Image (tube, rainbow, N blue to C red; front, side):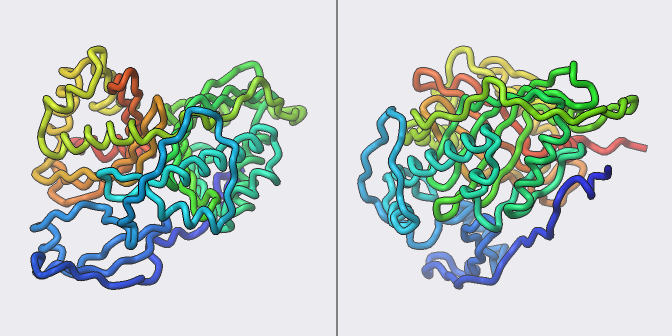
Length: 405
């Protein structure tokens, strides 16, 4: 069976129609753009004069329109969340925000509600009740799966999600368990960590343990987009690539849900840790390395997976500075980092970064393949950062200089 036969793909429109024009006040001459609704349901600018944009360096992404409310909202308790809201109520909640310093306000009640949504989605998925799971996704849902294995690609809509699930069931060897030890939700963005143990029908005696991060975007009370992010893409592809000397299976045994456990909503929403990591980035942008260091623990670690020159575990703050120096060796004269999306729980914070830079061997300004920084928080300090690319192969290719002839 080919990859094309094994998955459902569809065109991926980057931009829809322009929504409205916007021109700042006279203090920003020549700087105007039109907002477009992007593929995530948000608003992004297209500059009419990119040179003016470079001069004033307005942060990206820009604030969503009509989100200037500063209404006080009580912080969530640590109890399990059990309440529910209608779609109308969700829309109202998204206008009630917690005061903070980010570009995009975050609603605590909306975050709590979306934590419940993600939990219900996982509970149905783990039960194998896919019809119930599809009730929590939008009609235009997209699942992104990286890599080169049989399951790689994009899965569109309800039928695509069902195909993604059926691929796992038909390829499996009869054993499957999933644990979701981490759930972090802020507004309409959620991240989880998954530990999946399973086998294949080709060699059922061999068990694989795969670790994932998942990113979810919600819209009006449903999941509209999801990214499967293997922490070890090489191992993930190894699982999804049938062995060359495989024997034809004599039967396709039904996968057993063994000791699986979905996420808990307890502690899934943390404005405190959200602000901690915002402070970390603000100090990064201002060049305050000592301020950044003060937010990390004494046994701090920074980890990059894969096989590139940047891969490895960097221990202590000196280790982090070593990573930065290795990155600078590859960078050209342009580098700009922004936050695309972010979610925080009581123990974990996830940040999807949006980076533009050029490289020493290529002066062309490009967007770096996306990475998720997973911050482990302990006693109010950053204990570890896992720097996980959404597509490890694309990331490694970007940071590997060409071989000289």
